Length: 192
Image (cartoon, rainbow, N blue to C red; front, side, top):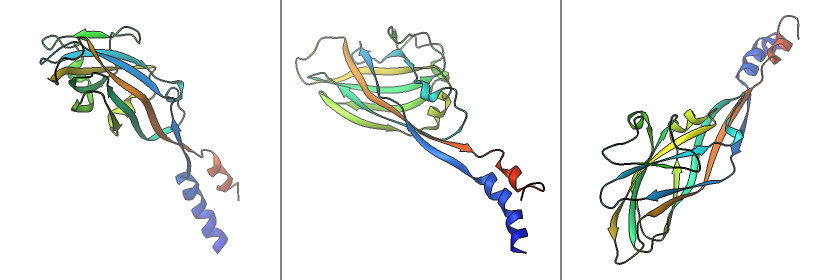
């Protein structure tokens, strides 16, 4: 009787089993030029994703990112937010700057990754992005970040424009699952 119960339960147990693996991508950094005081501008930067995020034959369970936002200015507070787009015109070596009155045409469909925050002078701010928006990057070779930025406060004579904001050590943390397919046949009528 127990053997029959085991035979009946095993296909359900195996169907529910999968191996989960956590993967971290190599760190990347992106420099964002800050070209405006008081009025926000948009800088579109292209980010080539590592091969670890492409052509995955697994199901992605979780995805998050960690990074440090570094403001190297000696005197200015920079305010910034980040949206992610799956389309864009910038290349990794050539960002595109847009004005507040002329944002990228796909800005409305880009999704928020990082809400607007101030970054004080000469500071490094650790950031964790835990958003389902990141899942849309899986399988893509390139994504575009549209960064809204502006100088909001000055603490005296500082750096001349353009300034820059650096997103350093961007690491994607991905938890994937690989189901055990085909093993249920061992427990079927012709198996055990």
